[in-house]
Length: 230
Image (cartoon, rainbow, N blue to C red):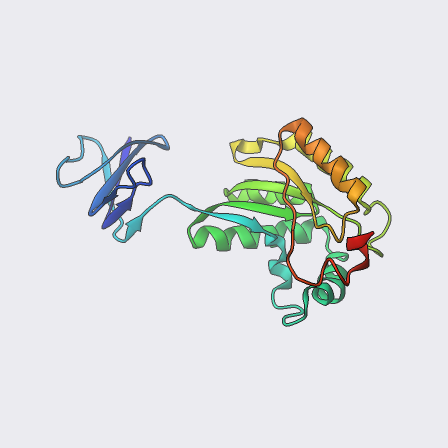
């Protein structure tokens, strides 16, 4: 059955950036088949019509997020970046399990969807848990597995092991459910040594994958942080 959604305004984002006031969008089995003025073109026989009101527009895109960190919201507020990471975030993240990350990502996905964001680009560890969570939540996601060297995170948490995990996840799960695309997420120049950045870039290039990194977040990171100049 064809479904027609009628709104006070439809933002088309087409080649002409048309805005229809009012407007309607028709879909057939999830595929948009028509956009136009509901006053000028009556709905066809058998078409279900839903009057939404408000604005109907394409979903928003969150270009960078760590949604599982919803579990740590407000922790360390007000600290400068290096202390916030070293004293608040990383010690907490070291205690997270796959199940913790699954539910943290699920909470983040719900908040995003409820605010009109239908695609999110994520960077985090625990890749299997994140992928399962976003598939179950129904959100479209580009997930870049986090890669970094942080002292005290335990065996297997160095950049080599995390890169190997990122390659495994990409090769096994890229394109999952038609909504999940994988990439590589070296955390930053101050947490990943130069030789690691080169190797990560090579692996990403080999797969045609997105590479996402934090860059120039603060004035101090390239001056005071020892690993940034190693």
